[in-house]
Length: 123
Image (tube, rainbow, N blue to C red; front, side, top):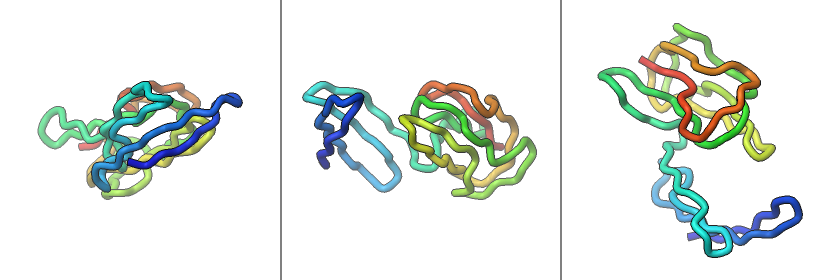
């Protein structure tokens, strides 16, 4: 467990972050003793199998789509950057969790997205 102090609009919060494995970004967090949320995303993007051979890439956090780095039908490799998501004034590059072909992109540059919202599909 690692402790951080963050400042939001001048108010300071003590945050506990637990690291479970190198594949996880956040497991759980607490601010001033209150559970703030739980994330179990793969660092390279959410890996949620739907049907055989299809991988949905979901937003790991709420934010705005700043750049889309691929287009439909592009072949991508594991770890290749797919899109850039701005959240809390930080740009986060989201990478492909596996190799495949971009079957669909569900958002446009400038769109606001929610945590867990489907961004694109790989086959």
